[in-house]
Length: 202
Ligand SMILES: Nc1ncnc2c1ncn2[C@@H]1O[C@H](COP(=O)(O)OP(=O)(O)O)[C@@H](O)[C@H]1O
Ligand SMILES: Nc1ccn([C@@H]2O[C@H](COP(=O)(O)O)[C@@H](O)[C@H]2O)c(=O)n1
Image 1 (cartoon, rainbow, N blue to C red):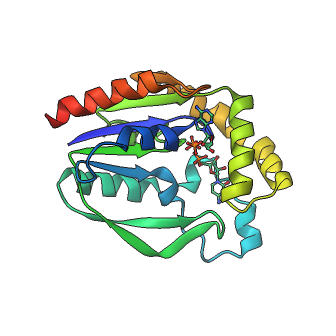
Image 2 (spheres, protein in one colour; image 1 turned 90 degrees about the horizontal axis):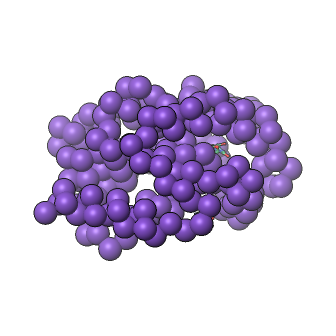
Image 3 (cartoon, helix red, strand yellow; image 1 turned 90 degrees about the vertical axis):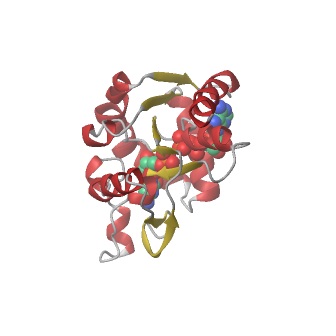
């Protein structure tokens, strides 16, 4: 199994890059795990309490479960992947049966900042986009898709997203084997990663 880790600040385009990589490859050869699925279960908290949580700090992620799941996949075992709701801001009760694949992609803002996860990756990628570009994309996406309003997105950006980015995410860039500049759609970089995957599959 080839495990590829893809990190980068919120809105840099990780999910988009992953979709572009996976697109055109047969379903049964590449699997994707998002760090977002592993946000801690906060069902014991009220909605108001959950909205105060710093979702950009490493402590907000159940890394233990993510590492356990990656190790199981490496041993060719299937996992029950958690499902996270951005609207409810907690894990849902249902899970998704996820089978091991020849290539597993793990994407998330903090996946290169955790040393134990880092050592499971064969290839480490950091997607870079400038912070103003990321903020604009995040505003548009969170209002359209994640049920947040302008005030909430901006408050979170100033109090958690930006400081945690500077403390944990940007410094993890140094661990990357490949840095993808993504202020604009970068089809060349995506094609290079696809070539690496195809080499592994053939
Ligand atoms: N290179 C790009 N140029 C312009 N918009 C982009 C680009 N990459 C992604 N986007 C858009 O920015 C938003 C955030 O992208 P997404 O892939 O969800 O980022 P991430 O997973 O890193 O948070 C989405 O609406 C997406 O369509
Ligand atoms: N309830 C939540 C949980 C997380 N976030 C934000 O998601 C960002 C990470 O996801 P990306 O797809 O953007 O990489 C992170 O910056 C959290 O602030 C949220 O808004 N609400």
